[in-house]
Image (cartoon, rainbow, N blue to C red):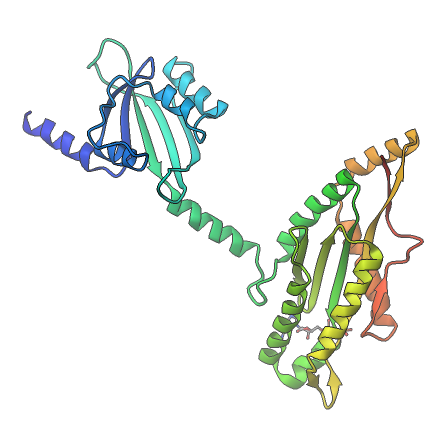
Length: 329
Ligand SMILES: Nc1nc2c(ncn2[C@@H]2O[C@H](COP(=O)(O)OP(=O)(O)OP(=O)(O)O)[C@@H](O)[C@H]2O)c(=O)[nH]1
Protein backbone atom coordinates (compact mmCIF):
# COMPACT_ATOMS: atom_id res chain seq x y z
CA UNK A 1 0.00 0.00 0.00
CA UNK A 2 1.31 3.45 -0.81
CA UNK A 3 0.86 6.34 1.63
CA UNK A 4 -2.40 7.56 0.07
CA UNK A 5 -3.88 4.04 0.27
CA UNK A 6 -2.76 3.62 3.87
CA UNK A 7 -4.30 6.96 4.77
CA UNK A 8 -7.58 6.09 3.08
CA UNK A 9 -7.71 2.71 4.78
CA UNK A 10 -6.92 4.36 8.12
CA UNK A 11 -9.77 6.83 7.65
CA UNK A 12 -12.28 4.10 6.76
CA UNK A 13 -11.25 1.92 9.70
CA UNK A 14 -11.39 4.85 12.15
CA UNK A 15 -14.77 6.28 11.09
CA UNK A 16 -17.62 5.81 13.58
CA UNK A 17 -19.92 5.52 10.56
CA UNK A 18 -20.66 1.90 9.62
CA UNK A 19 -19.72 1.45 5.99
CA UNK A 20 -20.20 -1.36 3.51
CA UNK A 21 -19.60 -1.54 -0.23
CA UNK A 22 -22.07 -3.71 -2.11
CA UNK A 23 -22.41 -4.71 -5.76
CA UNK A 24 -25.44 -4.59 -8.09
CA UNK A 25 -26.76 -7.88 -6.66
CA UNK A 26 -26.51 -6.49 -3.12
CA UNK A 27 -23.54 -8.72 -2.18
CA UNK A 28 -21.09 -7.26 0.31
CA UNK A 29 -17.59 -6.51 -1.04
CA UNK A 30 -16.19 -4.59 1.93
CA UNK A 31 -17.15 -3.58 5.49
CA UNK A 32 -15.23 -1.25 7.79
CA UNK A 33 -14.25 -1.70 11.45
CA UNK A 34 -17.39 0.05 12.81
CA UNK A 35 -19.59 -2.31 10.80
CA UNK A 36 -17.74 -5.32 12.22
CA UNK A 37 -17.96 -3.87 15.73
CA UNK A 38 -21.75 -3.48 15.36
CA UNK A 39 -21.85 -7.17 14.41
CA UNK A 40 -20.50 -7.95 17.91
CA UNK A 41 -23.85 -6.82 19.33
CA UNK A 42 -25.48 -9.65 17.35
CA UNK A 43 -22.97 -12.21 18.67
CA UNK A 44 -20.78 -12.12 15.54
CA UNK A 45 -17.01 -11.97 15.87
CA UNK A 46 -14.77 -9.21 14.54
CA UNK A 47 -13.32 -11.79 12.13
CA UNK A 48 -16.67 -12.62 10.53
CA UNK A 49 -16.17 -12.88 6.79
CA UNK A 50 -18.80 -10.54 5.33
CA UNK A 51 -17.57 -10.92 1.75
CA UNK A 52 -20.25 -12.25 -0.60
CA UNK A 53 -23.11 -12.09 1.95
CA UNK A 54 -26.24 -10.53 0.46
CA UNK A 55 -27.18 -7.32 2.26
CA UNK A 56 -30.75 -7.73 1.02
CA UNK A 57 -30.89 -11.17 2.71
CA UNK A 58 -29.59 -9.62 5.95
CA UNK A 59 -32.37 -7.01 5.78
CA UNK A 60 -35.07 -9.61 5.04
CA UNK A 61 -33.94 -11.77 7.96
CA UNK A 62 -34.18 -8.94 10.49
CA UNK A 63 -37.54 -7.70 11.80
CA UNK A 64 -36.29 -4.11 12.02
CA UNK A 65 -35.23 -3.93 8.37
CA UNK A 66 -37.70 -6.33 6.76
CA UNK A 67 -39.89 -3.40 5.70
CA UNK A 68 -41.27 -3.00 2.15
CA UNK A 69 -40.24 0.67 2.03
CA UNK A 70 -36.64 -0.02 3.05
CA UNK A 71 -36.17 -3.07 0.79
CA UNK A 72 -37.80 -1.31 -2.13
CA UNK A 73 -35.53 1.73 -1.69
CA UNK A 74 -32.40 -0.42 -1.72
CA UNK A 75 -33.54 -2.43 -4.76
CA UNK A 76 -34.38 0.72 -6.68
CA UNK A 77 -30.91 2.19 -6.11
CA UNK A 78 -29.26 -1.10 -7.10
CA UNK A 79 -31.32 -1.26 -10.32
CA UNK A 80 -30.51 2.36 -11.12
CA UNK A 81 -34.11 3.58 -11.04
CA UNK A 82 -33.32 6.13 -8.29
CA UNK A 83 -30.08 7.98 -7.63
CA UNK A 84 -29.92 7.41 -3.85
CA UNK A 85 -31.98 6.29 -0.89
CA UNK A 86 -32.08 7.38 2.76
CA UNK A 87 -34.27 6.11 5.58
CA UNK A 88 -34.28 6.03 9.39
CA UNK A 89 -35.16 2.90 11.34
CA UNK A 90 -35.12 1.66 14.91
CA UNK A 91 -32.69 -1.18 15.40
CA UNK A 92 -33.17 -3.66 18.27
CA UNK A 93 -29.91 -5.47 18.91
CA UNK A 94 -30.04 -8.41 21.35
CA UNK A 95 -27.54 -6.79 23.71
CA UNK A 96 -28.11 -3.03 23.95
CA UNK A 97 -30.78 -0.32 24.08
CA UNK A 98 -32.64 0.21 20.78
CA UNK A 99 -30.58 2.32 18.39
CA UNK A 100 -31.87 4.71 15.72
CA UNK A 101 -29.95 4.35 12.46
CA UNK A 102 -29.98 6.32 9.23
CA UNK A 103 -29.36 4.08 6.23
CA UNK A 104 -27.97 5.80 3.15
CA UNK A 105 -27.20 4.08 -0.14
CA UNK A 106 -25.77 5.57 -3.33
CA UNK A 107 -23.66 4.48 -6.35
CA UNK A 108 -19.89 4.92 -5.99
CA UNK A 109 -17.72 6.80 -8.43
CA UNK A 110 -15.11 4.14 -9.06
CA UNK A 111 -13.78 2.03 -11.90
CA UNK A 112 -12.58 -0.71 -9.54
CA UNK A 113 -15.06 -3.40 -10.59
CA UNK A 114 -16.71 -4.41 -13.89
CA UNK A 115 -20.17 -3.56 -12.59
CA UNK A 116 -21.39 -0.66 -10.48
CA UNK A 117 -20.49 -0.55 -6.79
CA UNK A 118 -22.58 1.12 -4.09
CA UNK A 119 -21.66 2.77 -0.81
CA UNK A 120 -23.92 1.86 2.09
CA UNK A 121 -23.64 3.77 5.35
CA UNK A 122 -25.40 3.37 8.69
CA UNK A 123 -25.22 6.38 11.03
CA UNK A 124 -26.23 6.19 14.69
CA UNK A 125 -28.75 9.02 15.22
CA UNK A 126 -30.13 7.86 18.60
CA UNK A 127 -28.77 10.95 20.34
CA UNK A 128 -30.53 13.28 17.82
CA UNK A 129 -33.80 11.37 18.14
CA UNK A 130 -33.66 11.64 21.93
CA UNK A 131 -33.04 15.39 21.70
CA UNK A 132 -35.91 15.68 19.22
CA UNK A 133 -38.23 13.79 21.62
CA UNK A 134 -37.20 16.04 24.53
CA UNK A 135 -37.78 19.14 22.39
CA UNK A 136 -41.18 18.03 21.25
CA UNK A 137 -42.15 17.13 24.85
CA UNK A 138 -41.09 20.65 25.85
CA UNK A 139 -43.17 22.29 23.13
CA UNK A 140 -46.22 20.35 24.33
CA UNK A 141 -45.82 20.98 28.07
CA UNK A 142 -46.77 23.96 30.19
CA UNK A 143 -43.56 24.99 31.99
CA UNK A 144 -45.24 26.29 35.16
CA UNK A 145 -47.37 23.25 35.99
CA UNK A 146 -45.88 20.43 33.90
CA UNK A 147 -49.35 19.71 32.50
CA UNK A 148 -50.04 19.47 28.77
CA UNK A 149 -50.26 22.84 27.07
CA UNK A 150 -53.00 24.06 24.79
CA UNK A 151 -51.30 22.75 21.67
CA UNK A 152 -51.10 19.23 23.11
CA UNK A 153 -54.71 19.53 24.29
CA UNK A 154 -55.90 20.37 20.78
CA UNK A 155 -54.08 17.37 19.30
CA UNK A 156 -55.42 15.12 22.05
CA UNK A 157 -59.01 16.34 21.62
CA UNK A 158 -58.90 15.68 17.89
CA UNK A 159 -57.72 12.09 18.50
CA UNK A 160 -60.08 11.32 21.36
CA UNK A 161 -63.06 12.88 19.59
CA UNK A 162 -62.67 10.68 16.52
CA UNK A 163 -61.85 7.65 18.69
CA UNK A 164 -65.02 8.19 20.74
CA UNK A 165 -67.14 8.42 17.60
CA UNK A 166 -65.47 5.39 15.97
CA UNK A 167 -65.79 3.23 19.10
CA UNK A 168 -69.16 4.64 20.10
CA UNK A 169 -67.88 5.55 23.54
CA UNK A 170 -68.51 8.57 25.71
CA UNK A 171 -66.10 11.46 26.13
CA UNK A 172 -66.25 14.22 28.71
CA UNK A 173 -64.35 17.43 29.18
CA UNK A 174 -64.36 19.91 32.01
CA UNK A 175 -63.08 23.43 32.18
CA UNK A 176 -61.74 24.37 35.61
CA UNK A 177 -61.15 28.04 36.44
CA UNK A 178 -59.76 29.47 39.68
CA UNK A 179 -62.14 31.99 41.26
CA UNK A 180 -61.13 35.57 41.99
CA UNK A 181 -57.57 34.74 41.01
CA UNK A 182 -56.70 38.35 40.29
CA UNK A 183 -57.51 39.14 43.91
CA UNK A 184 -55.47 36.15 45.09
CA UNK A 185 -52.46 37.40 43.12
CA UNK A 186 -52.96 40.91 44.43
CA UNK A 187 -53.11 39.84 48.05
CA UNK A 188 -50.54 36.99 48.08
CA UNK A 189 -48.18 38.04 45.30
CA UNK A 190 -47.60 36.56 41.86
CA UNK A 191 -45.09 33.90 43.03
CA UNK A 192 -47.58 32.56 45.60
CA UNK A 193 -50.21 32.67 42.83
CA UNK A 194 -47.96 30.48 40.72
CA UNK A 195 -47.66 28.03 43.58
CA UNK A 196 -51.46 27.86 43.90
CA UNK A 197 -51.70 27.08 40.18
CA UNK A 198 -49.19 24.25 40.65
CA UNK A 199 -51.23 22.81 43.53
CA UNK A 200 -54.38 23.02 41.46
CA UNK A 201 -52.58 21.30 38.57
CA UNK A 202 -51.45 18.45 40.79
CA UNK A 203 -55.05 17.78 41.84
CA UNK A 204 -56.09 17.62 38.17
CA UNK A 205 -53.13 15.35 37.36
CA UNK A 206 -54.42 12.84 39.91
CA UNK A 207 -57.69 12.58 37.96
CA UNK A 208 -56.04 11.93 34.61
CA UNK A 209 -54.43 8.53 35.08
CA UNK A 210 -55.76 6.51 32.14
CA UNK A 211 -54.24 6.75 28.63
CA UNK A 212 -57.44 8.41 27.33
CA UNK A 213 -57.31 11.15 29.99
CA UNK A 214 -55.45 14.43 29.85
CA UNK A 215 -55.03 17.37 32.21
CA UNK A 216 -53.99 20.56 30.43
CA UNK A 217 -53.41 24.21 31.22
CA UNK A 218 -55.68 26.07 28.86
CA UNK A 219 -54.21 29.46 29.70
CA UNK A 220 -53.77 31.70 32.76
CA UNK A 221 -55.76 30.23 35.65
CA UNK A 222 -57.92 28.05 33.42
CA UNK A 223 -57.45 24.29 33.07
CA UNK A 224 -59.07 21.49 31.06
CA UNK A 225 -59.52 17.86 32.02
CA UNK A 226 -60.41 15.40 29.24
CA UNK A 227 -61.87 12.08 30.35
CA UNK A 228 -62.40 9.38 27.76
CA UNK A 229 -65.04 6.69 28.23
CA UNK A 230 -66.60 8.82 30.90
CA UNK A 231 -70.26 9.79 30.86
CA UNK A 232 -71.62 13.20 31.70
CA UNK A 233 -72.86 12.00 35.11
CA UNK A 234 -69.49 10.43 35.97
CA UNK A 235 -67.63 13.56 34.86
CA UNK A 236 -69.94 15.76 36.95
CA UNK A 237 -69.17 13.60 40.03
CA UNK A 238 -65.42 13.87 39.39
CA UNK A 239 -65.77 17.63 38.91
CA UNK A 240 -67.51 17.90 42.26
CA UNK A 241 -64.69 15.91 43.92
CA UNK A 242 -62.12 18.24 42.34
CA UNK A 243 -64.03 21.29 43.59
CA UNK A 244 -63.94 19.89 47.11
CA UNK A 245 -60.26 18.92 46.92
CA UNK A 246 -59.38 22.50 45.95
CA UNK A 247 -61.32 23.81 48.96
CA UNK A 248 -59.50 21.29 51.14
CA UNK A 249 -56.17 22.92 50.17
CA UNK A 250 -57.40 25.63 52.52
CA UNK A 251 -55.60 28.45 50.74
CA UNK A 252 -56.81 31.75 52.20
CA UNK A 253 -56.34 35.20 50.67
CA UNK A 254 -57.68 38.75 50.92
CA UNK A 255 -58.62 38.45 54.58
CA UNK A 256 -60.37 35.13 54.84
CA UNK A 257 -61.47 34.23 51.31
CA UNK A 258 -60.92 30.53 50.44
CA UNK A 259 -59.38 29.57 47.10
CA UNK A 260 -62.08 27.82 45.06
CA UNK A 261 -62.73 26.78 41.47
CA UNK A 262 -65.70 26.92 39.14
CA UNK A 263 -66.11 24.01 36.75
CA UNK A 264 -68.05 23.59 33.48
CA UNK A 265 -68.67 20.04 32.24
CA UNK A 266 -69.69 18.90 28.75
CA UNK A 267 -69.95 15.41 27.32
CA UNK A 268 -70.37 13.65 24.03
CA UNK A 269 -73.44 11.47 24.32
CA UNK A 270 -73.97 8.37 22.25
CA UNK A 271 -77.34 7.33 20.89
CA UNK A 272 -77.26 3.88 19.41
CA UNK A 273 -79.51 3.03 16.51
CA UNK A 274 -79.51 0.68 13.53
CA UNK A 275 -81.57 2.88 11.26
CA UNK A 276 -80.34 4.04 7.88
CA UNK A 277 -80.91 7.62 8.97
CA UNK A 278 -78.68 7.10 12.02
CA UNK A 279 -75.96 5.58 9.82
CA UNK A 280 -76.10 8.62 7.56
CA UNK A 281 -75.95 11.02 10.51
CA UNK A 282 -73.01 9.07 11.94
CA UNK A 283 -71.07 9.42 8.71
CA UNK A 284 -71.71 13.13 8.79
CA UNK A 285 -70.34 13.30 12.33
CA UNK A 286 -67.27 11.33 11.33
CA UNK A 287 -66.57 13.87 8.60
CA UNK A 288 -66.85 16.43 11.31
CA UNK A 289 -64.42 14.59 13.51
CA UNK A 290 -61.73 17.27 13.74
CA UNK A 291 -64.15 19.27 15.75
CA UNK A 292 -63.43 18.26 19.35
CA UNK A 293 -63.52 22.01 19.94
CA UNK A 294 -67.30 21.89 20.11
CA UNK A 295 -67.08 20.10 23.45
CA UNK A 296 -64.61 22.65 24.78
CA UNK A 297 -66.93 25.47 23.77
CA UNK A 298 -69.80 23.80 25.59
CA UNK A 299 -67.69 23.24 28.72
CA UNK A 300 -66.74 26.91 28.52
CA UNK A 301 -70.41 27.92 28.33
CA UNK A 302 -71.17 25.77 31.38
CA UNK A 303 -68.22 27.39 33.18
CA UNK A 304 -69.63 30.82 32.36
CA UNK A 305 -72.92 29.80 33.98
CA UNK A 306 -71.03 28.52 37.07
CA UNK A 307 -69.29 31.90 37.40
CA UNK A 308 -72.59 33.77 36.93
CA UNK A 309 -74.30 31.61 39.54
CA UNK A 310 -71.83 32.72 42.19
CA UNK A 311 -68.62 30.61 41.57
CA UNK A 312 -67.31 27.62 43.59
CA UNK A 313 -69.72 25.29 41.79
CA UNK A 314 -70.02 22.71 39.02
CA UNK A 315 -72.33 23.31 36.08
CA UNK A 316 -73.11 20.76 33.38
CA UNK A 317 -73.83 21.91 29.85
CA UNK A 318 -77.60 21.87 29.35
CA UNK A 319 -78.41 18.20 28.95
CA UNK A 320 -81.26 18.93 26.53
CA UNK A 321 -78.89 20.69 24.19
CA UNK A 322 -75.84 18.53 24.68
CA UNK A 323 -74.10 16.89 21.76
CA UNK A 324 -75.64 13.57 20.95
CA UNK A 325 -74.09 11.69 18.11
CA UNK A 326 -76.41 9.13 16.52
CA UNK A 327 -74.35 5.98 16.06
CA UNK A 328 -75.31 2.79 14.32
CA UNK A 329 -74.63 -0.54 16.07
N1 LIG B 1 -49.73 33.95 39.49
C1 LIG B 1 -50.17 33.80 38.25
N2 LIG B 1 -51.28 34.48 37.89
C2 LIG B 1 -51.74 34.31 36.64
C3 LIG B 1 -51.11 33.47 35.71
N3 LIG B 1 -51.81 33.51 34.56
C4 LIG B 1 -52.85 34.35 34.75
N4 LIG B 1 -52.82 34.83 36.03
C5 LIG B 1 -53.71 35.81 36.64
O1 LIG B 1 -55.00 35.30 36.78
C6 LIG B 1 -55.90 36.42 36.91
C7 LIG B 1 -57.16 36.13 36.17
O2 LIG B 1 -58.01 37.21 36.39
P1 LIG B 1 -59.47 37.27 35.82
O3 LIG B 1 -59.50 36.74 34.42
O4 LIG B 1 -59.98 38.65 36.05
O5 LIG B 1 -60.28 36.24 36.66
P2 LIG B 1 -60.51 36.10 38.23
O6 LIG B 1 -59.90 37.21 38.99
O7 LIG B 1 -60.07 34.72 38.59
O8 LIG B 1 -62.05 36.20 38.33
P3 LIG B 1 -63.13 35.07 38.03
O9 LIG B 1 -62.53 34.09 37.08
O10 LIG B 1 -64.29 35.81 37.45
O11 LIG B 1 -63.46 34.45 39.34
C8 LIG B 1 -55.15 37.63 36.34
O12 LIG B 1 -54.85 38.51 37.38
C9 LIG B 1 -53.87 37.05 35.78
O13 LIG B 1 -52.77 37.91 35.94
C10 LIG B 1 -49.91 32.80 36.14
O14 LIG B 1 -49.27 32.04 35.39
N5 LIG B 1 -49.50 32.99 37.39
